[in-house]
Image (cartoon, rainbow, N blue to C red; front, side):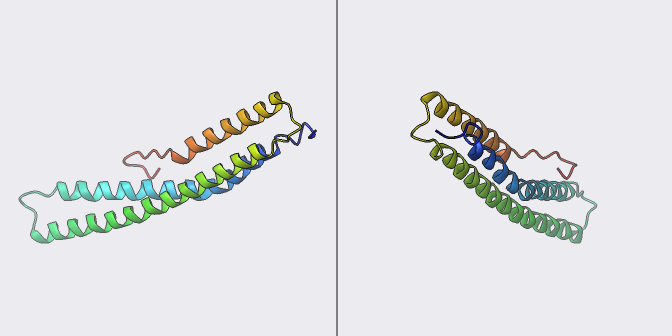
Length: 139
């Protein structure tokens, strides 16, 4: 029989592994929000042109929209890759926790370990997939 304190080691390890992904994921979310804000601002500037604006004003504003859109595409793709890596790390951690159940464990002990690992995985998935950007702010 496993030592009772070692039983939850895979679950604790999963939190640390996904936590290691968090700084990159958080930075990528912040960059995405900043780039989304820049894109929205550029679109608003273009939208704000009036009949008194020149063709040059229009071209400059359109270039700014295109540049901001390109940056937004890059940051969205980077965020998507970071989320994918974090999801894969969460899946591996959950699998390790489930595979760490010993054949000598009781059903109650195995059930407790699975519920603990599943709750941790669900929490991590929610953190991974949630990105909230506020217009006018960088995050």
